[in-house]
Amino acid sequence: MDFSKPDNARVINKLKVLSELRSGEYSRAELSRRVGINKVSIGDMIQDLIKEGLVTEGKKDSTSSGRPGTLVSINRNACRAFAFDIRSRSVSVSASDAMGKVLRFERFPRNEETEGLVKRAIERMSAGENIRICGSAVTGYDSAISDSLFPQPVAYIPRVIAEASAELASSRTLENCLFLSWSDSFDAAVIKENLIHLPTLPHMKAQKDGQCECGGRGCLEVAASGKALLERTGAASVRDLVRNTGYASAIKEVLRPIAMALSEAVQATAVSSVIITGELSQIPDSAYAYLEGLLNSLLPPARKMTVSRALSGEKGTREGAAVAALNLFFYRTDLLKRLETIENPGYVL
Ligand SMILES: [Zn+2]
Image (cartoon, rainbow, N blue to C red; front, side, top):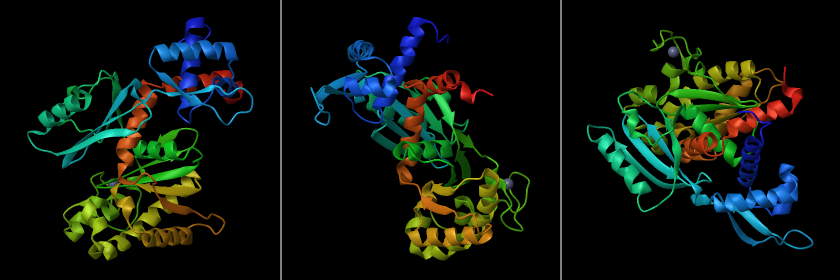
């Protein structure tokens, strides 16, 4: 896109306004200040955005001194984003509004009827609403499911990226943090300026033995994944592992290999905190304290790490996938990010 063309500049300014409104509702004057566009242009743009059904106008702003303006906010019904989480035993479908709030959620077991059930769920979730579907985000995709099932356009993203997006959306100041997704299997990502996927972390050496599917031995994946824990304990599901206190000692045992792998990873990535996401992030606070202690005992004394549980818990995957779909297909945050590097030559190497 050529940003010097007036039409494109207009699109970019609209995206900037929409992006700003995701963090709260503002008067035109406040938006003009925040986005750095003069009040007249902001006024015109808001009129256009209202006509297009992307924003709505609500109550008067009581916080400002002087003549109060009405507050502008995102029209939650401007679009719907779909998220699909494909797991070995289930498929879940959710529909979210334009602010990423999950409105509907359904989960189906995987068998020969799954695709039919998912298709009908999509129809149910969009029926009766004349609302545009901006796209879908799919986590955990495997080719046994037909990709024509998902409303287009589709983004296939690692589950940990979705979970990290949910955390970043709920805590915008989060930075320099490593996300470890702990469910059936492990996955990891770090947030620096962007989210970076770390698919090798599950295959870091965490114990002496145990053949891994990757060909290596003693990987974190064989030592401590949900799948490994299920095999070892005979628990019915990963959720059962967390809810049933009878498995507490089995979980405590695998915190050491996790601390081992993390100690390598946090030094290599120079992060200052670790957040655990995924189903197994729901282990008790005492397990977090123990893991944090183990990790710090393996690190040089000057490096103190905190290890905490994801705020969004089990809902993180679908909430984060919705945010990712909205970022990509509705708010076009990729365009804005690219523009930032053009506008600010300090970043250009
Ligand atoms: Zn491996």
